[in-house]
Image (cartoon, rainbow, N blue to C red):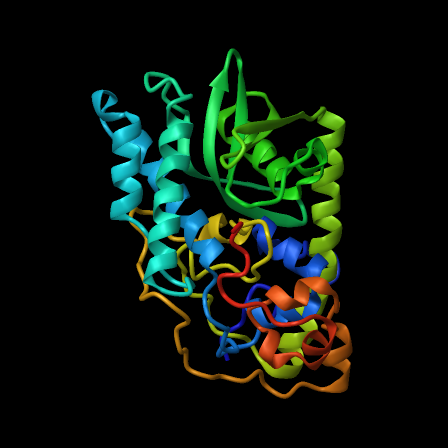
Length: 340
């Protein structure tokens, strides 16, 4: 049997294998361990519900903005952004073609209005840039929406398209943004302490400037989570065998939960996202997907990967496989996350 990253415990005195992860994987462990198991360990992966319309909006906007920066300088105009958005529009999850068309118009206004505030000659250091770093515990990677240079420092920029207003605490507490800042600084050998959330629906920019100490706390927290998750992964593999590889997924289909955030971080992280514009498009309305149930697990594993029932369960892609989640929150329709 082929061994995975954690299939063998280290010999005494030998270093432990690094836990290879993305911020999305770490956050999945914190949010719900059962969803973590369904997403990263069970193979074949349990079937998901229909795609979410708000994720389609977010993915389409992200892809259009990335493509806009790849255009020649003279074509970086609001009109070009609107055209790119239209050409790459993802229709999965909408109630019908009429709703999709309405949101296409809204999204065109979002991207054209946003790029109108940008200096097209101020090329970013990176767009959809994958960054990575490692410690003695983890090898972590992820993909940044945009990496700017401001003076002698780098700034991590993350686009947001959800309906919920953002606060400074969202930027300050984001594990993903902190890890991106650390990884970018190490890779580019340039200081990076500032992270920004650009909320396109309101035009608001929420900034947080980390210190070396606050970044260190985030990285330490990531290592703590990684140790917990790695221990559980090892036990899962001992009992169930090594899972198959995680296939790369595009933005719209790669999210693990809906909710009001519109763009899940997982769709941008390392092997869990696919670069390129436009993203794969799907037919309008809920899409039937093959039904695959989760494997039967022992009581020990069921306890180790226990669910965290709550309101967010109504947005979970794996809701149908979780009795606790079904009881915790009502089911949402694929278009309920849109800000109608």
